[in-house]
Length: 205
Image (cartoon, rainbow, N blue to C red; front, side):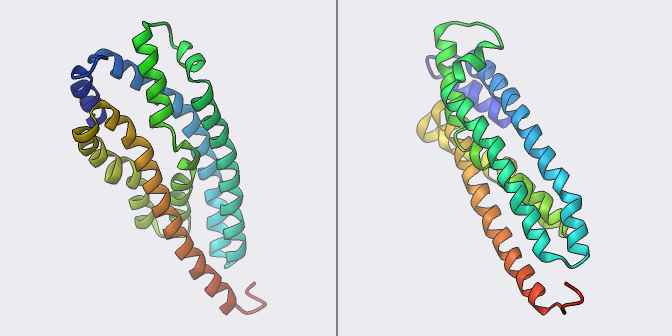
């Protein structure tokens, strides 16, 4: 809602008008939703594996499962990144034709807003990771980092300086900050798991 309102407001102040930014946003979000569905599927699929091994005290396998899921999320995200950055026009054309100004903004929107799609899977997987090991509150808070804690404030603040381009910049900046927070929290948790693993007896391992 905040994103749409910002696009409408700042679009009206630009050469693109109100309608073009909203139409482009719909296409970009629908396209990204397909990619996110795959990433979410991988993240949720590994969740019971992580939970089972955590409950069994197999902390090394917990880390291995997380890292394997990260690799596959990265592969999927890399494919999406290449498509969004190098083939935005054909993707946008699948949703219909429009005037040159529409394609100009839609391509700019896709390339800019989804620039950090490469690391999106880390935050989604990390949220499920904490839920799987019984830290649901931390997982919930982590799941809100990108959309709520970072994206909304950035969508409000950045356009004050950069206009409608600031709305587009909010996406990759929010993605990157959420990625950094996820890496920090998971790294700390991995250190804790490693310490617990060392304290386990050979029978418990």
